[in-house]
Length: 327
Ligand code: F6P
Image (tube, rainbow, N blue to C red; front, side, top):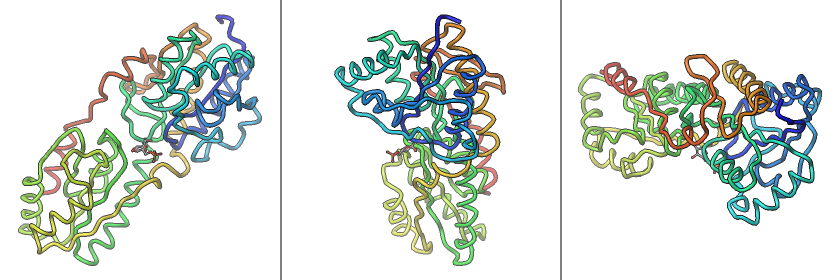
């Protein structure tokens, strides 16, 4: 134990199902190792305002199954300023916090790196985002739950699409990454999947839809990642297809923030539990500027700058599988 007696914890950036399970795991691991744990509200903003609460083992009871985050979340613009970070540091010092655990995505981790450069407070990152766009871990907390939510929604959309012989464009989340679109698209049997990592082009989309008609398909689903780089948003895309293929009756469904809510799957709860315990143990082992993650079902610790800078590659094999199966 490298003199760490008090750990601060935040959830920051877009919330993700399983963040509560991670909070519980951190608080309980702290109790197990006789460390005090404090949760700061609304991510970095709570650090700036000195808005925090002690997290005892009992205070995190019954939250493992709950979506969202009891600590709330935010994307603090004030923390981007040196003045904001100074206020945060002053509050951490006043509270006697020795180290921080940051649950969030790349924006959260970037904040941790900058803060550490200025004030040398040790920190560990836990990847929590539905986008799964962090290198150094196969899965981020919340991604599995979001995938299941999306597949359930597309199954329902398929019922109505098929009843009306319609083509549906379903937009899913993923600001810069196509993990949700690609995996939910294959899981829900989509005709085409448009992701930011692969610009298939408009011509190829039209060709594919023409082929579907010829092959006797009466309804189809196209899954579009919100970060797709085809050059049109999902509504423009649907209009473009209607203009070029008038035989199609097209509709758009944007799934939106429902993808971030809901009770976490068992997978996300177990992942969050493992990563939360490992984060506390890593701090006690003297680690800093690292992220805990899971690779091939083993818990691993990665340099945080690698996790932020390296791209988390999608599985291109899934695009091929999708092509074959939409024959
Ligand atoms: O949490 C990641 C994410 O869900 C992205 O997929 C999406 O682009 C973004 O958050 C939306 O965030 P908000 O509406 O909270 O600003």
